[in-house]
Amino acid sequence: MTDLPAAPAPSTLAFSYTGFRFFWFTTLSVSFAVQIMSVSIAWQIYDVTANAFLLGLVGLSLFLPALILILVTGLVADRVNRRLIMAICLAVEFACALGFLAFVNAEAHEVWPIFLILIALGTARAFWGPAAQSMAPNLVPPEALSNAITVNASAWQFASIMGPAAGGLLYGIAPSVAFGTGAALIALGMISVLMIPKLKQGGGGQATSLDTMLAGFRYIFSNKVVLGAISLDMFAVLMGGAVALLPIYAKDILHAGPQELGFLRAAPGVGAIVMALILTRFPIRDHAGRLLFVFVGLFGAFTVLFGLSTTIWVSVLALALVGASDMVSVTIRETIMQLWTPEEVRGRVNAVNSVFIGASNELGEFRAGTVAHLIGPVPAVVMGGIGSMLIAGIWAWQFPGLRKQRTLDKKMVEG
Image (cartoon, rainbow, N blue to C red; front, side, top):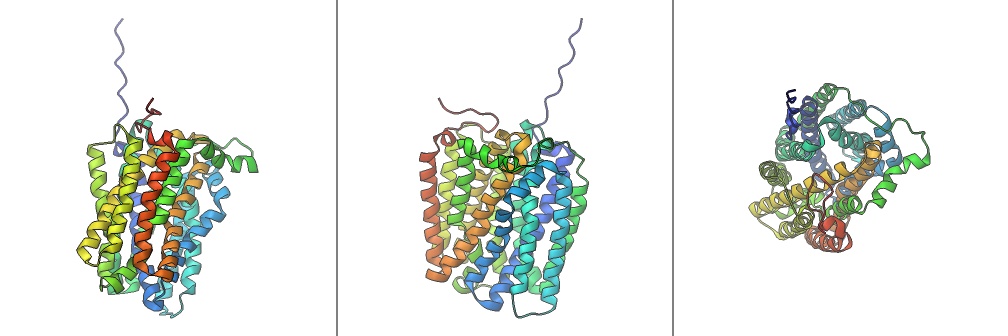
């Protein structure tokens, strides 16, 4: 008898899989639209009101729906076709983009309609997050998941590079051009997500009850490595986030305009995409937990540098280093979480993760805006960066299992 040839090993490159390629393009186009509209909304509000507190409310308006609906969004992601959820969410986001377009065309001098649209947008994003985050492990084998997370994050970061700069330039032409472009990109994302092959997913056989709705919380709090990874991101970025204050830095500290604001918004993405390319060529093989805490600490340190800068090139460099540090921590945290989470509760776990991410980003913007309103933007950013470094140290001490995690492809810790 002759031996049968061994089956080829699954590719570790995410782009080898058709479904992932459509998923990646969806991430790219939608993220591009979000970045363009974010710059435009922030500049519109601050230009009309000159109120830092209202900039913080932008983040709060986007975060609250995810918090209020946390028990529902994860269960829906586990029970309903995730591709369908993403398509419906994009339809709502497309309507929100048209709402922003109608607002700027009306040349209104009150900003409260913007916040109503932001709440609708936040609701769509609340359902989008768990569905999109849970889909990646269904599109590639475990061997390619780390690469998929890095590559998909690079799509978002590429949009973060080009989107803010494009948003500033388009807004400089006309606000309607910026929001119209955002709507068109979201429409492209809708088409792309419908091209993703229909996938099987687990979790549909359980009866709906409070117990099943709370399954995500139970899993996270029973697994200290996953809990440490999720909460580390939440508190570090909650303290160190400075994106909401960039319009203030651009206009009042660096004495620049919307174009320079776009460059500031793009800088973290530049750093992140460069780091993503490095990680693709030299993936993390060992001491993942230690690297995670080191780069979270660097995230805080470079935030302090940005907060103290009064020169545009130093500010751009500092933000690029912030983005590079964050890319390392994102890759480590998300890979650990997705590989360790069972498929049947992945949507609910990712719903909790989405709220934690929202708390770190949108609620972090609210924190930054509120503190800047009380004590000024520079102290708000510097204190936040110092807080992120303290969080890295405290979490390294409180979560030794996460600190000792060695690899990203299996549960291996130091003895």
